[in-house]
Image 1 (tube, rainbow, N blue to C red):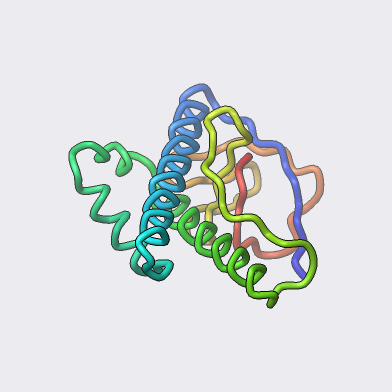
Image 2 (cartoon, rainbow, N blue to C red):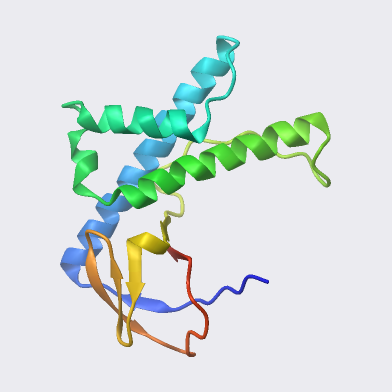
Length: 158
């Protein structure tokens, strides 16, 4: 069973700016990849796999227009690609009737004003007694409302 714990982080002003930049980068990667997938779908091609999307992200980061994507950690960017692939898989499984329950709608574009979040996998963060260290952001002060008794494999920042 997976347990979810919620803790409050206290970033500095510099870390707030870096988190805001990271939220924007994840949103841009999601929206660009979703547009690419929709374009392929309209051309009658198959949905690209995560490996292909990851290679495409690497190529995009090398272009001059999107070079600023290299300023943030690549871990949440890669995770957004995995999340998009999962969203498409759930949508197509729902269309084919392989998924129980209500029909799942196709993935949507993310808006700047909607709730922003990023997910760090286990190699993108470390947990210490008084802080959480995020890749390319630094140590964020945290107040533990309860002890963290298990090893964390994912960290969501909302």
